[in-house]
Amino acid sequence: MVVDKLGEFYLCKKCKKIAFAAVSAQCGHLFCSTCAEESDNKHKGSICPACNQKIKHLTFSIHERDIIRRMDVKCSACNFNGKYFEFLDHICKK
Ligand SMILES: [Zn+2]
Ligand SMILES: [Zn+2]
Ligand SMILES: [Zn+2]
Image 1: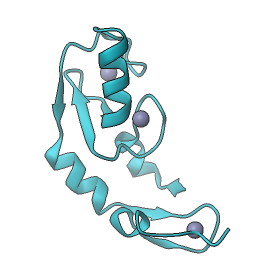
Image 2 (image 1 turned 30 degrees about the horizontal axis):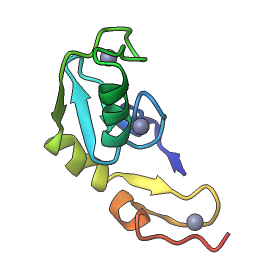
Image 3 (image 1 turned 45 degrees about the vertical axis):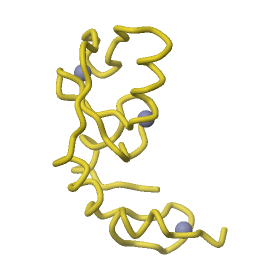
Image 4 (image 1 turned 180 degrees about the horizontal axis):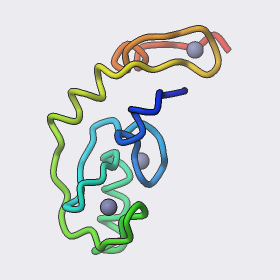
C-alpha cells in the first residue's frame, strides 16, 4: 500500500504501517494499537522510536482515527485507489 506524503504522520512509528485503531503517546507520535499493546505488555516504559522519548502513557486518538479512515490510499499490488476504510474491505486479486 502506498500513502501520499501527507499521510506519513499517520503511520505507526513502530511498524511503519498506517496506524489503524491509532493511539498516541504523550510525545504526540502515533502507533497502531497492536504495536502499543506489545510494548506495553513486554517492557513498561518503552522508548518512542521516532523521538527517543520514554512512552509514559498512551491515549486513544479518536480524531486521528477518523482522519485515517478517510485518508486516500493506493494499493501497491493493483489499481485500487480510494479511502482507507474502503481499502480494509479490499481483497486484492494478486
Ligand atoms: Zn504498528
Ligand atoms: Zn515520540
Ligand atoms: Zn489491491
